[in-house]
Image (cartoon, rainbow, N blue to C red; front, side, top):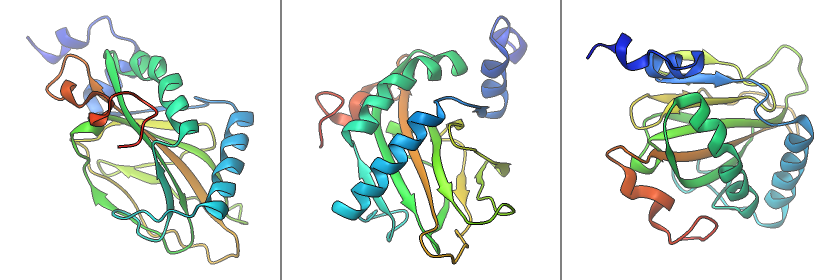
Length: 200
């Protein structure tokens, strides 16, 4: 069966996801929700700074934060609509990037088979600067509320060094991970937890 037969009947974004391995969704969540989550993340950074132990060592980040786990479930229908797949949620993560942080080129583990990165907010103090994510070599600019869906285990993705040496500059991203319920990684549902919302 050819690719044309496989994608016939799918919507535009589903076809783009099948062909390219990623797709952009603009205005996936409201500005009000972005603002709320952003303030929440900045307060959490002040009260309970938790450094990313692996990818971005100096950045505040959280695995399975209750607000993010709620959004993980809320985004699932949108993720299914734009991929054409039935998905199991695995886990959520968020990170507050600061000047000098860099997300090195990588692919993800099995629990991140179908992933999205969602821009909550940023403060650069510059109308000229943006800080894109690269997926499979393609530069993707995300505004608050936009997300990029991508095949996390297949497509290399990264961000160059965050280079805006202005006091209190930041960039806040959420990461929401799923597996194909009918795919090879379906056993990674909930990322090995008993339920969404629990910490390992």
